[in-house]
Amino acid sequence: MFDFSGRVLVLTGANGGISRTIAKMFFDMGANCFLTDINEQGVIDFAHSLDPSGERCVGMKQDASQSKEAEAVMKAVKEKFGKVDFLVTAVGFYRDQMIHNMTDEQWNDSLSINLDSVFYTCRAVIPLLADGGAIVNISSMSGHRGSFMHSDYAAGKGGVLAFTRTLALELAPRIRVNAVSPGLIDTPMVIPLMVKKGPILIEATPMKRLGRPEEVAGAVAYLCSDLSSFITAETIHINGGLHVVS
Image (tube, rainbow, N blue to C red; front, side, top):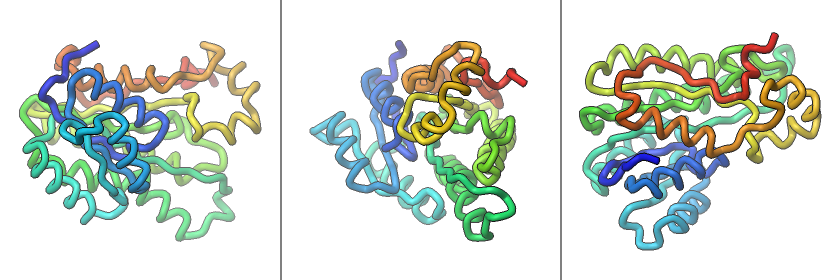
């Protein structure tokens, strides 16, 4: 699809369904990949499955909700690869909870994972970003429309969208910053939702199916490629048209 030979990708939340597909796609297109996730053994094993030599792909534990861990990751990236061309932030978490039952701790934990993590990682990567580099933040359709019983998640992902646009202004013209907003994608994360009301959601989706992880990964790759060199502060919806259904 694209030639990313010699380019360096940093991917957070790399052990998720969409994230694994992004990592494999970038690796197959020649990129060197630095993968992080809170699941240390999971991300290390995944990186090893892509590159047993460890020369082009490595994994590292990162609790992305902690600013010091973002700084530690970038220090390790600099030691390993010397620069960053692409940052993709893909950390995400949600639980079912009505607002009137949500505790302060639940709200703050969710915002720290879904929003603070993006700020910490983006801030830490700026000194390492090569000219012409790109940042892609994974938001969600929920950040545009809201989401019943997921107010904290929707607020966090909505914040990611506003942060993305602001960061794009601050880093232009040297670095481009965009977001993608997936909807219902065929990953383990959406299984509980599909069990509850899958047929209703599929019927409401104009494309009448779930999205595939590679469809998200392809959009991310495009936003990192030279073909999107005049695109910044933008968000691509990847939800089969569901975001325009009232």
